[in-house]
Image (cartoon, rainbow over all chains, first blue to last red; front, side, top):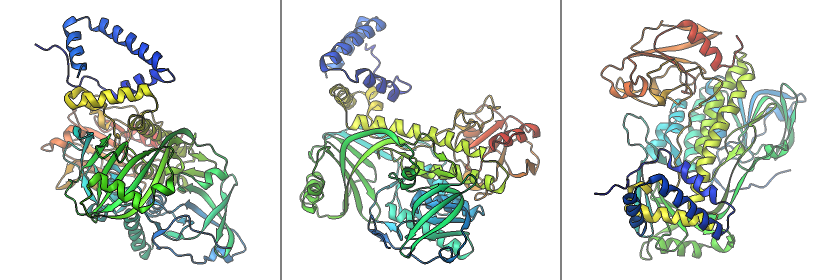
Length: 62
Length: 544
């Protein structure tokens, strides 16, 4: 049974998206890639549920 | 000395005529001079004149410019125009739409309905070519002028200099017969994004420049696309990096193509090149005619303050946004709605110029909200960096299958009026159980009422009168304070679920104090004359 939330779960999606883009401002591709990696690992820890992470990885494969 | 038109006219509605002011030795003083006769200048002039203020409009052209330009008029501006008496012909002529669809290449990835709730007199949007909009407004002005509306329009009168004089300003005006001068207690500059008056006063206009150009084509064709806003990211035709399709009246379709930054404008605007792009998009077998085309670039910026001495700025002159979201003309019309009653009370001596400080506070709040939204849309549509593009493309990819990603798709967050949270004119919310959407500072949402609608039944629509609206609450029949008589309306929300939900929430009764621009000033669970008087003073920036 799927545990990953794939319905709308953000109160102000535009605000968080803008934050994300701002965080990448002025960075090289390499720096952006590194930021993304750190961000994903941090969020993995926050989620703390291997099943959810596995489902998210599968979803992101497209 | 004469001067050249900067643009072609669609209607030559106010040809130059020599005015008596030009032949007098002494300076003629007007209470209000509006510089610019576009949608914002004319709406402001009409609003002030309906309130009994004598207004002079100076326009450097002799009528209404060509080109569809601002085509999307939103619900709140339509409510304002209804208050001024000319929304009906606009809605009758306009194309009503509520639905937007977003495509990525060939696939529909996201749909939105701008007005998912009923109980409003006006739709979320109408599409109407700007010349039609201006013509309906002007026709209304002309009809009222015949009945004595104190509004004068002078065509080919160009403001060349402004001199601040403390309690008035002097304008040097150029005409085909040479220069003359007029004095004004207040000047309102509605002279567009490149505002000559802003430049004359040396005032800044700071913000972000976006390095992309868009080609607009107005195309006449018989097509069976539905009346919805269709937006494509990476359209399959390849005719632009993004593409927008909108229906206008008279079988005319507006198409915007994103064509990049380094473009040869003259080359792109050649009829055969515009035709090629349009045919690539709609199909080479479809017959069509190009009615108008233009290339635009844009910036998101505003003045640091909208008032300098006796000169007040409104519309594009004060703030400029990207077109995604239809926040240009719509926010300009909200500027006029905010300013007209304040200026009227100041001119009458009922309030002091301190009240005008709130125009700055409230409309800068509005401009910032519009700039924020339109900047975000622009960043999404035309990503500035590789990282930004990677995320944008990820959103589009995910949105095809996954609901959670769809709200992140940003092809324009369409114009809604802002709530003046934190305005010095608001009184602390006294209705604890009341709905958030009608908290002090909010624009009153419409609701069905006694066979019609609430907003059209609010008191003295064209005056500068405050409205007391009582919902199932006892209030006196009349109320006067600080030299102002309020309009009083008692209604019942019993059996009117929409009115109850929008104005009472979990409360059983309520008393609202509503400003002349139909924003909530204060609200309480019951009548309290002292509190209402205090809130009225506060809403007019009176020192009591």
